[in-house]
Length: 82
Image 1: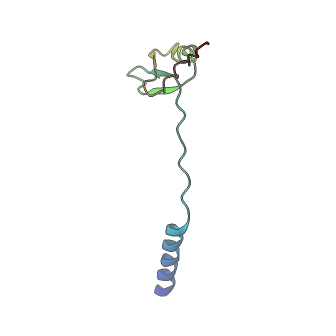
Image 2: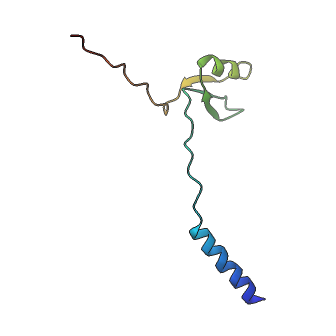
Image 3: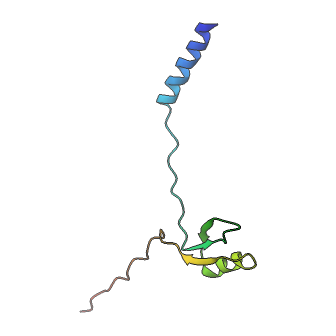
C-alpha cells in the first residue's frame, strides 16, 4: 500500500513539472472607477463611461474617478505636408 501511494505521488510530481501551465491572462483595464461609501466599502474599476459609473452609484452614494491604471491614449500622429 505504501508503494502504491509513493508511486502515485511520484507520478503526480512528474506530471506537475512536465505539464505546461495555463497562460496568464491580462486584466482588462477600464477608464472609470466607482468608490463606494464606507458602509458598503470597496471600489470597482469596471466602467467604460462616466455615465455607467454614475448610474451605479446613484442611490447608494459614492463617487466616480478616472482609473489611474488605465493606459493613456496615444497622442495623434502629425503628418508633414509637402
